[in-house]
Length: 529
Image 1 (spheres, rainbow, N blue to C red):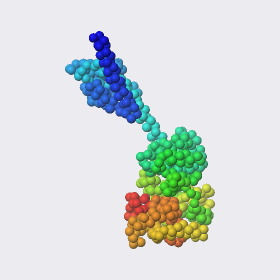
Image 2 (cartoon, rainbow, N blue to C red):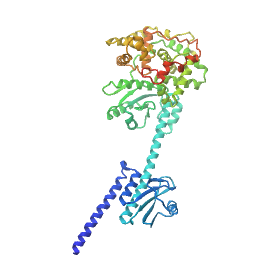
Image 3 (cartoon, rainbow, N blue to C red):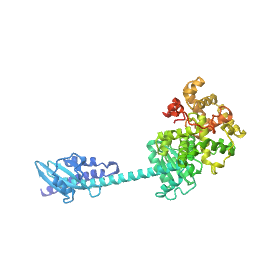
């Protein structure tokens, strides 16, 4: 009989040990990265020991569980550290209170466990170990929150540096970057890359870009396009690093700019976006902006400078910082939509539109006209590239038509548009009508007597033929517009540098129904102001 009793006690101890091991394993599972939830731990404790459990902070505010009436004096003694734990029984209840350190400095909470049955050794151990686990989880949660705040602050700082570069304030950008990334912008030139994935995977892709470039590049989550990551880098090896990232992340595309002056980051960004469109048609899903023949390079430099200076002269009456602000905003607003430009610059879209309307008024221009936009875009890019004193430019009156008469430019224009003839559809006629209609497919369809969808399909079909984006505002579209002007397919806009006047209020953009339609994001218009 004695032997049998010993065997029975041994078996009971083994079962008890297995039970102890089971609850300990369950508690450890709650500490894994995928299971760190304070409320779930409190609920698990209540179910495991058969009790009502609550966790409150020093003010009695519930953090998890179902709050129960507690003796305020006893709770105060525990919170203040005079007691580490306390037990109480009465009225058919058994209460256990344990101090729990909170992540807030010099703060503590109380874990309250109420049972109808007395606390045995097993229940007491589970409560004690759970209290310790809750402290770890609370401390980890604060660490995670601090890490998230730090990561958000770093991301915001990267964006602020990019925004300064976009408005050509390189000195301020260097000062901001010097604190966290010394030497990052100690360069005169840089390349810009845009990596595209999906909005859901962008954060993971941005981290991969930071790791691949070893924080030697400015990596920014694009504020305008949720699927884009922008990389500004002075290093020549970054292109190879980013290609490796694309290979490791299926469905990722990469577009890169040519090397540009750091002050021309906005222009480099436009090149990268243009190359990104080409990357969608490449087997390796990557492309670098090709240094193709641009129309401004075929114009007489002296005449181009003189025309630019005279066209932008009305802005010379403004304070230097105001003039620079208007030029930078208008350059981005013509390159992208007003909404995208606003996000990149960190201002409201109404601010972008107001600045662009002010430039319209000063120049006596109408930005709803694609030919006018192309001309002003040409002038702004020429202005950005001027290194000599603008006041030294010739005073000979120059009009846009004078820039478009050179034989080299005409040959380029005819050669570019001749590509459209290889398609069986009348892409040339459709594109001409679409440009005349301000990029609006509905109005172009009325001019041609066809369906608007036909116009859209023809414009999309012209993009791979011309190797230029047309449905989005930007340099590609404006080059095609200039080709139409230089070839004689369209008449140059009537810009009068010597007769600048304020636009009459009835002719302002907010009074023109076609522009209001474009501002609402009409998909047929590349203006999108």
